[in-house]
Image (cartoon, rainbow, N blue to C red; front, side):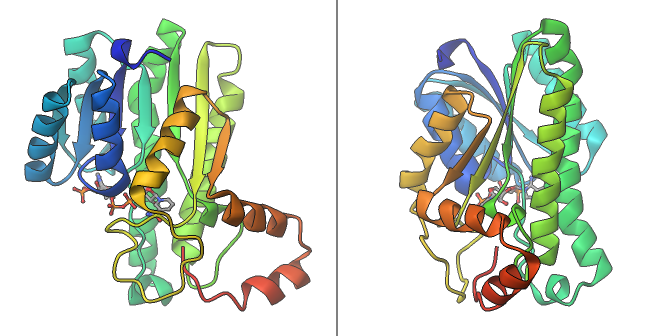
Length: 256
Ligand SMILES: NC(=O)c1ccc[n+]([C@@H]2O[C@H](COP(=O)([O-])OP(=O)(O)OC[C@H]3O[C@@H](n4cnc5c(N)ncnc54)[C@H](OP(=O)(O)O)[C@@H]3O)[C@@H](O)[C@H]2O)c1
């Protein structure tokens, strides 16, 4: 895949995986549209992306605001003519007492950002990609969406929804020149996981994870899950009957 020709719309760009992906993609010479809420971080990131060889624009916006996300995509298309790749990465862990006690407003916030924010992002690019007959939709979902995890009802539900949403979109757009890549990482060291005291098996360094994200995108993989050790365990759990799953997962002390 030739990144130099590509216009990439990346949500959740201001920190963690999004920030590291932006720098890596910038080094390959792509054009980047960086979206998140924290403007100062985006401004600084855009400068670093341009130093690394990319053209970068930034959009300070909340993914839950569908109109604002579309406006950002429109601006990017107006300047560069197209968006080739959407990376729907914006998300929160929602690892707090309110979500754990299933406070409706706290659960809603996780679903609004992680799932509906991704829906807004897809909606902002899909029609034009279909008109062009090309484009790639990338979901940064999670292994936490494969089955419900203890203490993570909101997050697991949001990521299960995200995975199912992108898979449905893949079916609906088959044969129309689009590809859909669903990435399901395990635990990666970012601000989202920092400060956690729970056990995070096979926790990955961000620098080790980024090439795996890039490989999945470049190869237009339908699904990519890593690290392989945790992916194997979680995928095996998918076929466990409920009684066995409850016994094994109920004992797990990790969170999303
Ligand atoms: N780290 C992990 O172990 C792990 C594992 C599996 C999946 N993931 C997924 O990977 C994605 C990135 O997570 P991360 O670990 O890199 O966390 P992070 O460092 O906290 O980054 C999250 C990004 O999402 C943005 N964001 C959050 N709410 C937003 C909103 N309402 N509108 C726009 N942007 C918003 C944040 O920017 P602003 O605050 O500036 O808006 C930030 O740029 C998430 O979807 C997460 O669920 C992470």
